[in-house]
Image (cartoon, rainbow, N blue to C red; front, side, top):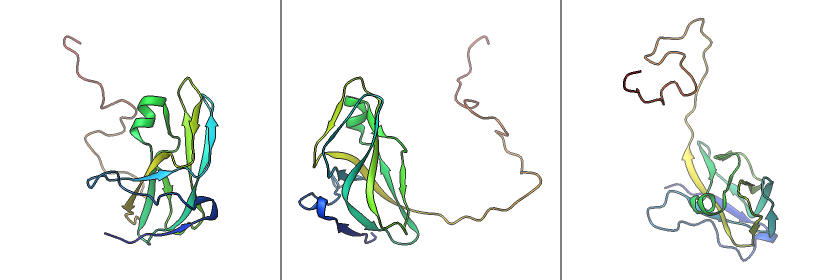
Length: 151
């Protein structure tokens, strides 16, 4: 377990800190710190009323809530959104309404979830040729089509 420092901003006072809905939940629910309505096809950056200090070597991943997606067609647009360890500004959640009805966000509504995950350091090495693989350069959909009988 790691410790993540959280600063409640003035407009976030009275809201619950991010929390797990159950002991086995990977994500911590994030509540909205404002009220607004998102029209069908529209996008909004919703204030959460807090800022974080995520330890070096980790990131925060802002992910959709499955219930909002299934019931209302509302999801996190840049899922998962990344909160870098050196970011100290307010966490905002970018929601898009893919549904057919306006979606009302009330202060305190759980709008997303936060997963804190390790970041693997990487170094990129320029090469002239890549090593071979079974898949090779096959791209979009090249591994997702089932073999058809008689084809």
